[in-house]
Image 1 (cartoon, helix red, strand yellow):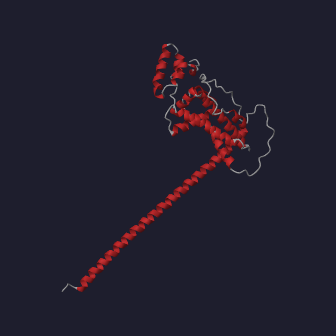
Image 2 (cartoon, one colour):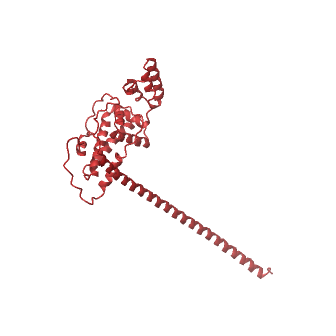
Image 3 (cartoon, one colour):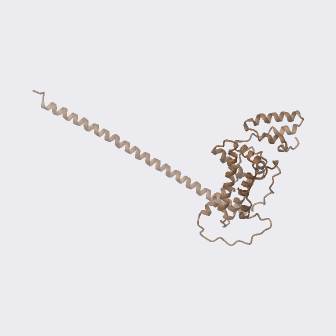
Amino acid sequence: MADVDVFAIDEVIDLYRIDPAEFVEARAALVKELRAAKRADEAKAVVKLRKPTAAAWALDQVAAEQPELIEAALAAGEALQAATTETLEGDRSNLRAATEAEQRASAAVLDAAAGHAALTVDHREKAAASLRAAIGDEAVRAELLAGVLAADHEPPAMGFTAAAAAAELDEAPSKKAPAKKAPAKTVGRKPSAKAQLAAVPDEERPARAKRKIRRVGTPSSAKRQPVDEVDARRRAKEVERLQAEEAERRRAEAERAKERKRQQAALDAAAKAEETAATRRTEADAAIAEAEQAEAAAAAGPPE
């Protein structure tokens, strides 16, 4: 079978604009049409297309109708990643602004997506995860920008988990001054978080006219520079450490909650046992009193 850019087929784009409930039937009809037109290779490619999830489909509609929201969220996500890297290197000056900007941009996309479909909390979380995954994954980014995202995706461990970890570092007081850095190289270096934040589209700017949907394989952004492996490993270890500490904190809290529950159960059991014992003592006292009365009556003899 010849290589086919399935998303270059105009009818395929339409599949991702209809209600997902109609996707399978529409896909079968398109395959039938392509086979009838003797476009066998395209038909074989189309039959493999996946029905989009609810979260992915909602994002696709935003990409088609409000692409500026998607691009703003991607730009804000890149700025947050840059601020995270800078924070782990000792410069926390841009983390708060980058975090807030990313949250606003993501919320704008999710709110727009909710206008196309009734999204549950789980759907919103999956849509947010896919949006963040597109920051570092070129294939996911291309599908999202083209409005043909079908699956839900998870962001990489060194993505927004690292941002959360860096935020914790930002909250903690610094115990020592950061080491002096060598002069920054300008050739091949990514823009700073501050520069990337300045490039994030302003929410008050008028929305741009809808652009033609790009096909997968032709994303608008250039390839990113590779991350230094040593630095990435260092940051990954720091994130793993913070994640391990958080997991231990949650485990300890769960143990404490379990112990509190056990102690409460013991107290409840003791209280119930005391109540039962008190009831039995009362019954015993009543029985003794009745027996004493009966004995006194017997000793007095029959009435005259």
